[in-house]
Length: 186
Image (cartoon, rainbow, N blue to C red; front, top):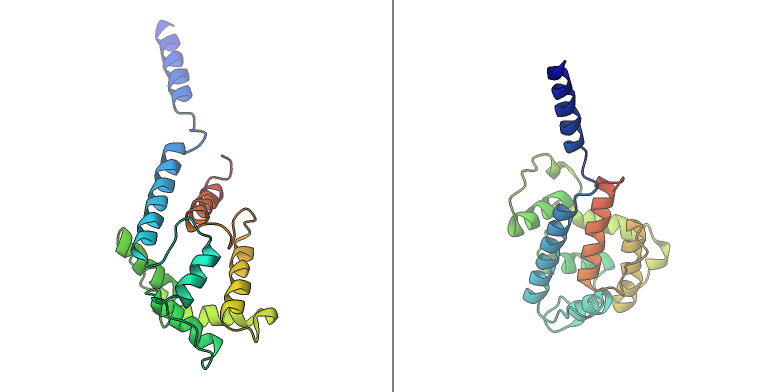
């Protein structure tokens, strides 16, 4: 009898100890800090990037600034977008997955993605997406960029960040969105 009481007590204590943690707050905070530090590093190595300025003003300053790719009115929108993609060290002929894997590999660890190459190239994907918006057709340069950036955020379904937010604010919000998706009950 005494043994069964002891076993029941141990079982109850171990069950209480094994209760799930409400939120992976330490992990979440660590990942958010890591992302914030990566953004700050990226901002520090990109010429003319102002960490306090909005994404829109930074993109415009980058594209039209002395170190940016510029916008050539003699080229099509697709060709100008490809120039911007290349200037950001992405390969427009590779898939989004390969480009992301390469960037993650530069900052963290290499990602083995063998079947990703079967997808369309990032240049093709972005061009097709741009062509799906009638209100972007015929726009050039600054007007195109100012109208294009909000489209990105409308696809992400986030209303509290956008082109007027800083890159750090956007990155932190997207990290929170990722965690909210992975841990919806917390």
